[in-house]
Image (cartoon, rainbow, N blue to C red; front, side, top):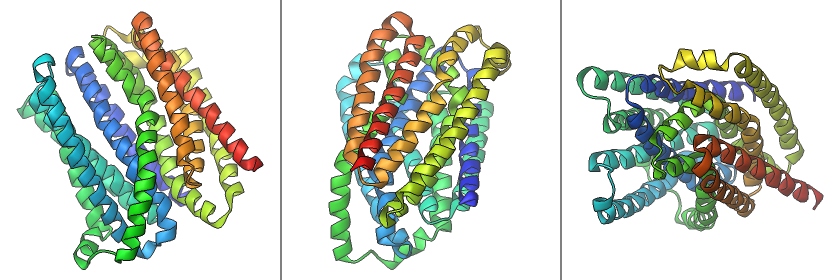
Length: 413
C-alpha cells in the first residue's frame, strides 16, 4: 500500500510540477492578455478531461474488481472505444456551434481546433493512467508522466526558439506530449497486443454496456457539475471581459496547484482500493484511511498558510515578473484554504463512488455548481477575481459538508 501511494504521489508531483512551472514560466514570456486567453482555453481542456474521467474513468475503476485483472486490458479497450466515440460526437457538436456563432466571437479557428484535439489527447493519456493504477502498474504511469513532461517542455522550447508562443503552439505542444505518453503506456501495459487478440465475450459486453449506460448518465452529470467550481470561474471572468482577472486568478491558482494534484494522486490510488473493499465489505478500513490522510493534509495546509502569511509577497515576487503581484496575493489569501477542503470532499466522493452512490455524488455536485454559478455572478461583478476565489471556497466547503452528511446517513443504515 505504501509503495502504491509513494509511486502515485511522485507521479502526480511530476505532473503537477510540469503544469505549475510551465504556467509560471509562460506568465513571464507572454502578454497578460494572451495568458488570460490561454488559461481560459486550458480550463476547457481540463473540463473535458474531467468529464471523460467522471463518465468513463471512474466507472472503469469501479467495475475492475468484478471483471478481474486477467481481462483488464480488454476492458480498457472497450472503454477506450466509448471515449473515442463520445469525443467524436462532442467535437462535431462543438464545431457546429463554433460555425453558428463564428461571426460574433473572436476565437480563431486554429486555436479552437487545437484546443478540442488537445482535450481529447490529454483525456486519453489521463485515462491510460487509470489503467496503470487499477492493474497495480503505477510505475508505468510514472514513466508516462515523465515522458509527457519532458516532451511538453521540449516542444515549448522549440516553439519559443523557432516559432511564436501562441495559444495554438502551446496547446499543440500539450497535445503532442499527451499522445507520446499515451502511446508509451498502452504499449508497455500490453493493450496494443490484446487489441490484436480480440474482444471479450458478447455476454460480458452486453452487461458492460448496460452498466456504462446507467453509470454514464449520472457520471456525466456529476462530472459536469463537479468540475464547474474549478473551471467555470475562468469562463465567468472571461465573459465579463476581465482577461487580466483570468490571468491573475490563474497565477494565484498555480501556487496551490501541486497540492491539488497531490489530491488527485491519492484519489487515483484510493478509488480502486476502496472499490475492492466495498466489494468485500471492508468499509471501516476505508474510513480510517480517509481520516488519517485528511489529518496530514490539514497539517500541510496549516504550514502553507503560515509560509504565505509571512513570505507570500516575496515568493510571488520571485516567481512572477509582473506588476500584479499584490492582486495575485489577495486571491491567494483565499485560495490557500482550498487544499484541505478540496481533499476532504475528494475523499468523501471516492468513498461514495466506491459504493456506487453516483446519484448522491451528482446531487452534491449540482449544489456545488449552483453555489459557484450564482455566487460567481454575484461576487465577480463587484469583486472580480477575489469574488471568484470566495465563490470557489464556498462551493467546495458546501460539497464537503453534504458529502460528510451522506456518509453519516449511510453508516446509520
